[in-house]
Image 1 (cartoon, helix red, strand yellow):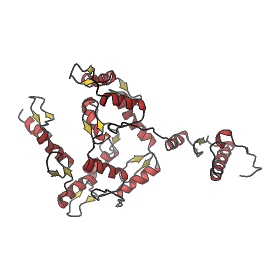
Image 2 (tube, helix red, strand yellow; image 1 turned 180 degrees about the vertical axis):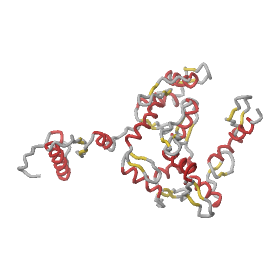
Image 3 (tube, one colour; image 1 turned 120 degrees about the vertical axis):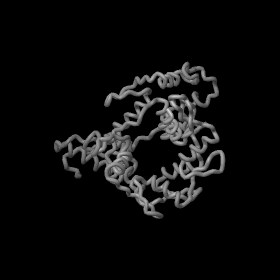
Image 4 (cartoon, helix red, strand yellow; image 1 turned 60 degrees about the vertical axis):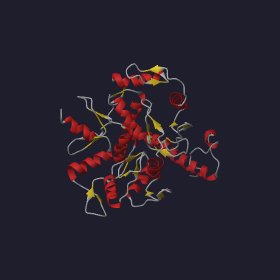
Length: 358
């Protein structure tokens, strides 16, 4: 860059308002020079970020980069802690769950009642099977706009997450996301729980541990049946029972063409069905496992650790599933129903055994 290089030497009003420090000015000059020289040389059109003035060769790269500047507004319910992107969604949630008013909209099929007419309409689709929202890409249908939006993320995920982990095939939109994820594959666990001194590879894993094991707060409520859950992902799984929606299967095995819903499930399928690989070895015995989670559960039988305590008595369990099944002894819940005779059971295995009698 020089005074007589033939390029413009003025700075526009928009840019000058954003400059506070000399190093900002120097960086902007470099970016602008690169942009101008590229255009004068007749190169591919350069895409410029107006926030930080970085330049990109393609519009896709620029769009992906802009997400790093995006600030998503957070509207938090002061009653239950649920978070919403828009204030309107928070207001609807508050009216539906915390207003204390009578629910005037009643379902003629199951007699459930709702605060909002729109919630009743959405609920009625669980009875009728109506799915009016269509995906323009693969033409699948969904009962609500929110389910369609969740489905659309699968298409954008394939396109917008170019950074792939070579160990487990999980993909990320940003390189920093991949770097943070790679820590989970290493032995490094810098995040320690201040209640039980367990250590974790990421802050997210520590937060999940505290939620599941120590606080057991259930901040995510199903707006159809009012059941509460610890995490949004568990709520999403539960919602599929109401809508009949199944997880999208977009990851295909190259050997047998079977499709699964995630890259992690694909990796497990390949190990279980084709390669027989069991990379996770127990340090106490010769056993090895396909997944890290299976090893983690197995290890508890050696250590005697039982982290899942019954909410009603002092019994503890190796897995959360065992705790849930046990708690049905206290609650009397029998969610598995025989379609032939109507008998109910607390475990799916009991239902399967019963079905043989028919």
